[in-house]
Amino acid sequence: MKAKDMREKSLEDLRELEKGLAHDAFQAKFKNFTNRLDDSSQIQKLRRDLARVKKLLVEMQRPKASVNREASVPSNVAKAKAPGKASAKRAVTKSAKAAQSEATK
Image (tube, rainbow, N blue to C red; front, side):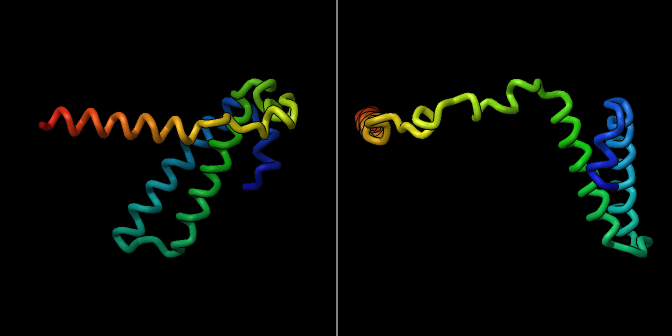
């Protein structure tokens, strides 16, 4: 099923579709394990459809403001790097190692 078709469905329909696809995927894996599945590509198709449905459910439940969060941040602020972050990390690591070595003595 295409994502375009899925976007037209309601939230409840997508949840039911998710449950059905999860069940079908499990059954296909089980049949494949017992050598009763004729088309093993069906497993991959079901998993991809299930992933599409889950992604659409997340998109529908997420508030609209958080989608464009990056666009609202000015480019110079988004690309700015915290000065001295790496050196502070090293200092913490060195002090932690020193404390650990003193504790073992």
